[in-house]
Image 1 (tube, rainbow, N blue to C red):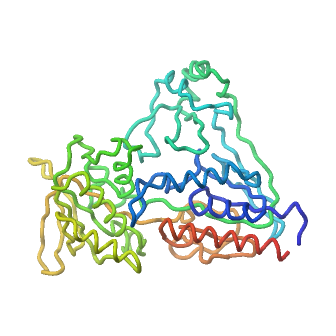
Image 2: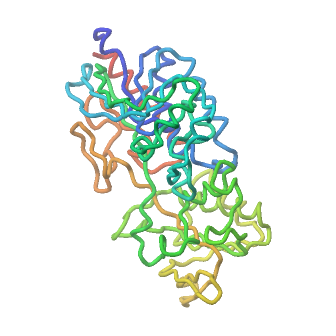
Image 3: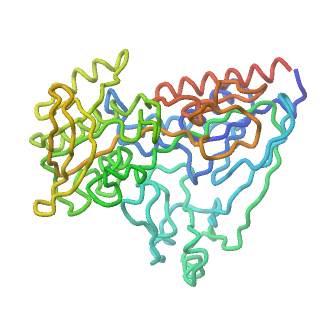
Length: 420
């Protein structure tokens, strides 16, 4: 075994796979550093309304993970943090972590006095910009850590001092500076997750031009009680209840001009969303435009159950273009019905684009030499000695598989240390 300095494990990314890797490693008796770029842990899963296929909320599972982290002295986590550099080799890595200023210290009780004193608003990143929040904010109601964060727009304004004085706990530090922390670790788990493909690049679908064309991740926030409409699914343009809605599969996926691969979970996500809509509006007409439905192994039952929804039509055909009828205000989906080889125009109140999963490694550089595949995913679970990939940077995957992947990476990281 190596010396005690290098018996620790670094986990980069505080989403579901990274949290799992950190928790499992710590509960096996190893010291863990968990680094997350956002001001909270939980990643994309924290932004979900429900999991499929059971359609239950992620809050309970997340709360259990947060409690396991809080109660385990072997886990030290950093939010608003990024890895600047990695040097050394398996068993003896030197890592520099940059801690970006939050301007709110650990005295914060999330009382909200600072928020009340603030008049500056910013787009809400947690809700994908669909609503506004104050420029000093709690990232979301279940945020962990439960601590406010100050946006640069407020920090650099004349209002910052007034907001600081409104805090009864001296939690606001306007002079907080970036810090660099040096760590020595034995192995590394990289789990920096994914982002939705940029729908602005899909110029024939009108995203950004027509407010009632949204993406699947935005739909998830619309359905959530913590979302911009408190869980009411309505048209963004006028707040009206939709009488018809279309889900457009493979929006930018399986397309040589965008993402050439299938993300595997988008069909299931759209079926989940169809269930959300049917529950709120039993009379709403729902279309799912698809090339073919990917609902493998045990998910076939979810597909079969969803097909029984009374007003849902699975429409086999790729949507070529989405336009807006100015007289009716409806969105028109131009699509070829591949079963009859006929061109159709289907008018709906809302369109949801099923955009694919793009690994963050496709655009964010990794400060160590690892091989990426043609799509930006890390090519293998163990691309170099002592360095392990987990979750959606390895392959597009769902929550359950990401948890399993995080557990596998933890075991590999532990084995890496033990065999030194």
